[in-house]
Length: 154
Image (tube, rainbow, N blue to C red; front, side):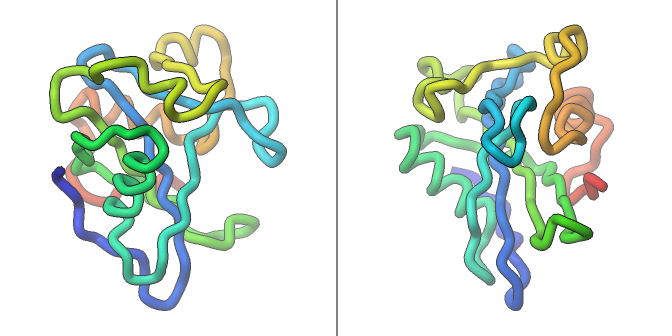
């Protein structure tokens, strides 16, 4: 398992938002929004302890939740800084299979209402996504115009 070793700040809690992707098909898994994100599709929010590597927290959570163990964390990481109503830093990591594709459908393993999307489907249907900059992060990663490392998603 390849993990980015960057950690949450030592003085504040943060969250990691793992996005399960399949690069070959250019698709990704989204969950139906809950009470705070009703009407849009989103990705999980996983709490990370101060000083813990957020990629490790994402991988461990996904392994426990889905049984997927052969994960790779992409080198591009989106950062949603704590501003305004968002009182915590959130790191968006892209999680892909070690092989070319997942061995089976990961959607039901992640959530009963989860579904795979492509960027074309999102745009064509006018689907709202949270975080709203997620499609741009995915496009930049897949098209190769985002540098490795942390990228602000403000």
